[in-house]
Length: 93
Figure 1: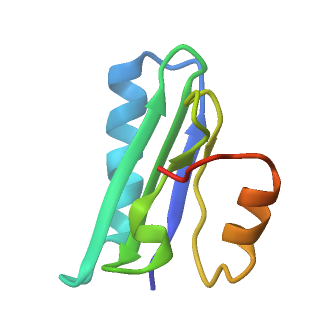
Figure 2 (figure 1 turned 135 degrees about the vertical axis):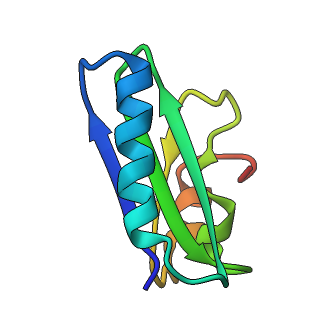
């Protein structure tokens, strides 16, 4: 089953990334999963995910046009596209 992992930490980036990869490997056990990571080292925020290829979550994370707000989501998200466009976001990247 696809999953979402993450941490918010004051660890050095190299340690945080290593910990994130360990967590990601624990949920990346099917060959048909795609995976990805996103990090903002200045905030100490690190996110990783596995997803089914071609699913909504396969394009994570999505951001606003200024790329100062990011969203990672997982699962069956029927209303998220409508909700995102109602928030004034011009495009989902």
